[in-house]
Length: 257
Image (tube, rainbow, N blue to C red; front, side):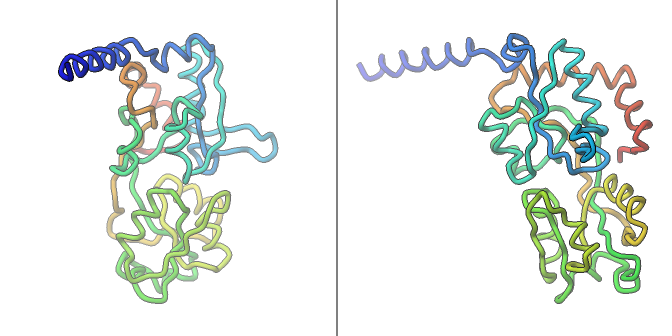
């Protein structure tokens, strides 16, 4: 009897997993795709304070995705510390790109990657006489700023066990701590670093011999919806072959590692 009950519930579970509606069908039925984004990662996703509109490399990509699906794009503001939770709690269907990490992959899915970056350290130009390599930063008394919930927070704990970490919460950002003199160093992607030193002439990339943590970027997705992940992967593959991502990189002066 117990064995029969086990088989019965196994069949029900299997049928539910097979016939459960994919996020893809829900999006098409509702006529909209919800995309979570932080709006604080220049030039990938930026909220323009003058218009409250989101702009950037990632925003143009998800706009094209929505256009190709013939649905409306709905931007859902989020923060790095709640990025994964927004997927898990069904606040949005995908996020704009995030670094692949083993920790995030425990509870969310990822699409195929279409961009690769790495981590570099920044400081004020006046501090360059103190910092020339990674070891110069990993010393007692050096304050390193990181934003809570980012992969850089995890990386900094590994790279700088001897330094003091200044962990701040968004909407504040780590580089602002360096500009204000409350920290001496912060780390970020090579693409944001290039934008920051152009925007703030007093900042500089520390001339380390090589960046750390080469990492692919991809969209976060619900972990249990392979139909939706498959569609997104097919879309990325098609757009790669058509040169769409290369055109976007050239437009935003980005170079994938």
